[in-house]
Length: 273
Image (cartoon, rainbow, N blue to C red; front, side):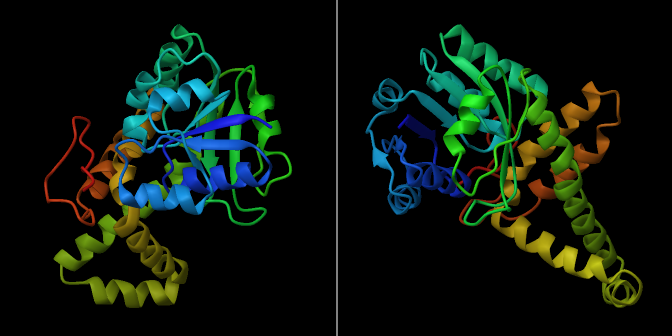
């Protein structure tokens, strides 16, 4: 049994935590200052509340960070001084991974890079947590026997995040493009005609647009930072970064449930209520 702390249990973090707990690990979280919705998710996942973040850090062998990408660096700073194994499983660029890694290792912890592909895990063959780093196999072992696959990509942190960036560049980048195309057609008075033509010649586009709208309504706010991270990854590889900077603007324009219009944090992501 390994003592694992979850930072912080959103939909994905809570589901991963539940799978780890079912495997027999001691999984905890820090409830101080968290919202009722987060507390409800943590309780539903069967997580133990350690109370303060300091208490969670002291009680954990492993810390697993699953948060919106624009918060990844701040979350690492909040637990600086932790001396166990820190797993960053956020959708961030390899360059941002190095920033998080520097914070974590300077505080005395070991670092593993993670990239999640798939939905919150509820059944087999849907969700993979790609891992890279010297201790990646240890993290993979923690998920052994669960419905979560944990492939190890190698010893160098940043590799797992590079894969995540490349994967999400297509899935979420094309979703943003479909949303922008639809909005342009609507403004030009040809949306109905476009939908009719797509239904004849590109039937998959109609379903993909519907899925993009649903996803953007629920969680497009957290993809703003992810698109910026993908753009940074493209730029570092010598590729044009404008595709995903534009995608960030598309997602930034989506309404955030319960948030006041125009309220942004320091990184330009919509503030949650």
